[in-house]
Length: 336
Image 1 (cartoon, rainbow, N blue to C red):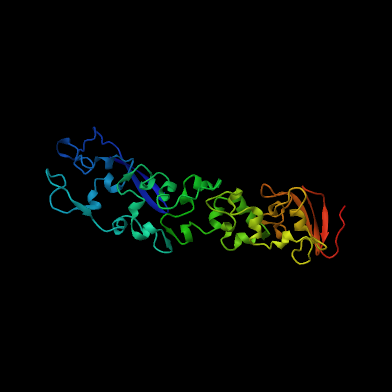
Image 2 (cartoon, rainbow, N blue to C red):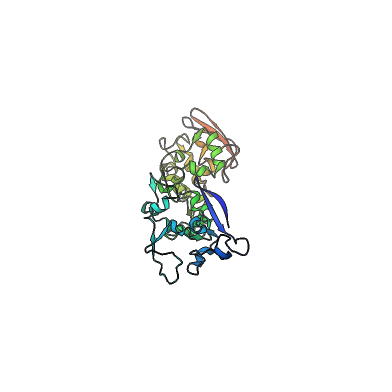
């Protein structure tokens, strides 16, 4: 007898059948004299095929002829007959006779496009789910794709767990790189705190809503920089924002954050002690204040709690670094 377990795979319900001994010591009650019914996996020829933990249904039900057909006449178990078989159809149509086409349009994974399902799936059986040839998505993908995704000091958890399928559909997708959804929706499926922040924010960082979204700043696989950033924080910010904002000490054009003509970005970055990073004062994703300046309860570790009050020509702020200081672009304020 066979025991089955239904498994949902990308919307497709697949029944995995596992061979279990027949009642009565493995005898087939339908065979003459109670002898085991002959089959390809019990005849002593292809016995190992039937030993997998998970069997392809035609193998589990002794329906090898669903995929193979003899080139000559005679029964497969006739004594002395040399068995020569050929596939009962061409790939991938042979697979599609039972399985749904999982990718038709959009971006289709090359093995699917070429019709070589057996590149990833064993057609007879496997010790792994979905009849995969190796144990994890990562091990399977690495057989074709260069294994450089986990070389960074900091590795995205799905990558370190070998679950490439968490983000990529192995058959195909409407999105590039076979992503299951486009960023930021894909990323926000896991990063729910950032999702809540974006939903409640009054101002959103343009990097989140334009271009490659989250991938503008983060590497989805690994990085040598914390938070999987694609570059050092200051360099990353200045790849979009004008570098003069932190390089020019006095000017009336490069920034609105100034006291008279004194560039306060420059002051913060070039302090005698360790300079302040952009993310200490700005929430890198979104915020309730203009310029997504952080509030009294920062949403991210490393940001400085801040009370910010804007005015028509400047504003004031109090943070964990200093007391309440004011600034004005028209008439410089003398702070004690």
